[in-house]
Image 1 (cartoon, helix red, strand yellow):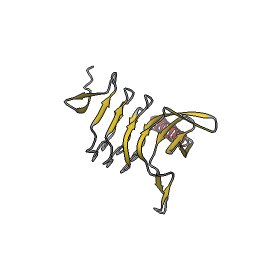
Image 2 (image 1 turned 90 degrees about the horizontal axis):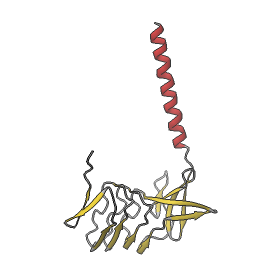
Image 3 (image 1 turned 135 degrees about the horizontal axis):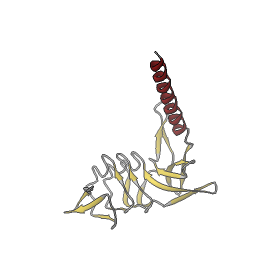
Image 4 (image 1 turned 135 degrees about the vertical axis):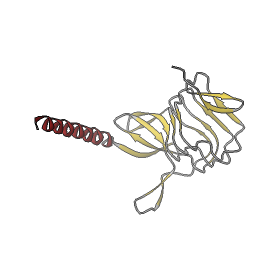
Length: 174
């Protein structure tokens, strides 16, 4: 019986610790903002930002525009400054450029992740670069982007390679 009580105490402690960690992670302060025509979510504690779609749907499924639709040549900056604080742009969030009229997309060396469908249905997209810093390319990226004629992967990327005009994940040896 002693062992059962001890085991129950340990399990309760582990569950409580997990709940506290989850609560702390969910308390990351976020804010949607627009800087120079691009919408971002900023993570105030981490001082990072992710490019998001130019719109969002509220709880009532109503559409709200954050800024004009993305179009033309887009150069995502390495950092944005909001209220005197610099935020490093590290990600294209899910659906960031979904069905936009972007013709070229230049990504900074601070980008680590291309989120799910972050560049999809971009039927006008002709030119894009993937910086060496990119570690993750999620599902759907570059889907229905059939007009790309100038695609570059920066040298030094340790996660992806270009082979026969195809972007592939590098096989890591242990």
